[in-house]
View 1 (cartoon, rainbow, N blue to C red):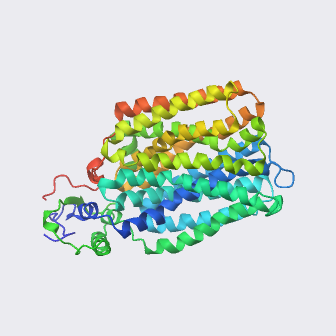
View 2 (cartoon, helix red, strand yellow; view 1 turned 180 degrees about the vertical axis):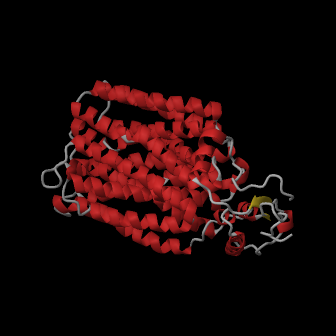
View 3 (cartoon, one colour; view 1 turned 90 degrees about the vertical axis):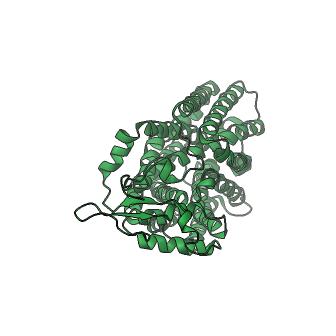
Length: 489
């Protein structure tokens, strides 16, 4: 029986069989996969660039010659940024499931490009916050489309390592932001009134390059076969096989096939049913993992520039030098540990990295409260904390993207981003901005202990109800909604 051939009887729901998932998972790693990783993974680089820019620029943004923002206002703009990301993830996530991965990762990149350009032209607190929110909406939508496409195109045996490393590339963007701030905030290079503006405009230039590269990426064949476009999905898989050096359709007889029902529109009810009725444990796990890591990350990185200025008297133009080792430690974790999430396993590695980062965060907070750390020593401690925390956070996003049905994947990612950032992230920058403004080390210690406790709680939840998804096809981890279980093979 040929691919995509209907096998339903008259009067019954049409069913067809396909080996598209198996053909994608058996592909050897070739240049096509590097293209997917680089063209789509840049989303996290852009996110890291945007978030770290505000941390690097926080001292300058408080200068009367720029926007004259207070530490509390800088904290609030961080919260507004996260809210924008929540809205973008929900709206664009729904559109990604409806209209396709490729169309939306192009639209969301355009939204980001225009908004970050506008941020560099902001004239006050309100305009800056609005443009930051729109920028985040583009990034939030990018994340939903990008995570869906990558998981659906990367072979199962490498999905964990690739997902962990790509999310860790957030810190490549952070490093770029730190370097940019060091150069652009140097008064010998540009006046203080202009340097911070060019920092944001540079992100738009990078996005423009990526728009061109993404022209060479196909639509996800997995999305196509679950949306009534089986023939198109099979054609694209054949083209990918050629790009990977395989004869299209070679050895197809030995590959497992799945039977799918003819396409039916997926509504919000199916999403709610998946989250609450069918997979309640996975929902609880996802919210816990995302909310806890979001609180810790956003609390520290949205306000670290203000903290260095307040407690250590660090000149604003030097803050980028402290963020560079931060970025290196954060990227090194996923890069070095990523493979273990496919070999040792998801549950063990996620629980371990959450627990280690929680303990290290509490210890660092205690040392800081007792005034035992210089600015350089504090930065070194953060490198250790986030070596593990970065892998943990990356694994949280990976867990969400592979734990729910393909037809609702992008929207579910958006929903979890909304819950995770809304519950754990939006309040954190504002809270820690106020703690820093108080000038009290004990107050900050309480915040760090709370964050460390959250990470330990997440480690326990993962150990109890985590999902062993390593090296398994997406369709085995979570069957598609359109799967026809009773159809003949």
